[in-house]
Image 1: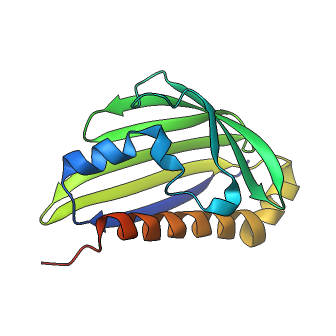
Image 2: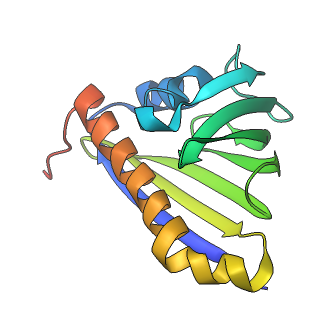
Image 3: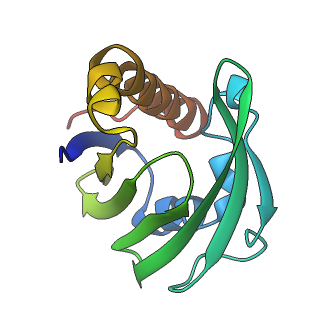
Length: 156
């Protein structure tokens, strides 16, 4: 069994409150997801996140194949972090921690995703040439979308 880890950091020139307000609203996921993924919230995204919230999405990550994805927000500490876990969807395991920290001149966002692919050895085989590059592409898009919306962090 192989569990993969994706880590990403981004600094933004906004307040912790502004970052939390934006990131804790499930509707904003569409704003930071590539258009080609056809991201659509089916249910559960009509209020700011809370522990126990179930959100169902439709996404089209690869080759126009629509996929239903159900996540649960399992932990929330307002202004600091939240965790979403896949309940049903394309991964055997998806555990995504989102951390926010106030820094001089803005906020530091950190993501840590632990995930496992289905299909045993086939899943491990496609990871380096299909899944890992696709996840990196999605997180790179998110980084650019957030910089477009909030500006680029300048080191002080």
